[in-house]
Image (cartoon, rainbow, N blue to C red):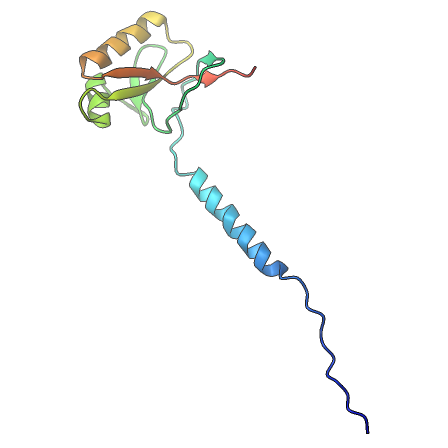
Length: 128
């Protein structure tokens, strides 16, 4: 009578574990990408090329008529400066493409008079 050795099953690759990790990463990036509120839908950004800058996820917008809006509500320069806080804060605003330069300067001046140390304009970076 011969002894038989138990047949060993060939071990496969742990693909299920890999699929689970990739799925969890996908869910993480979908949630992380949705945390920033979108810009105001009525604003079309100004085209610029060759500038280095940072676009904040949450900035007030200046509409073509000079109205200052933050999160779909009309606001004032003093409220914008108070929201940023601190002594002489840097304020970032998103001007509409159709905003006349005179209105942009008026709003920037009002922000400076309300206590802003610097006023930064967020624009769309042009493709080269």
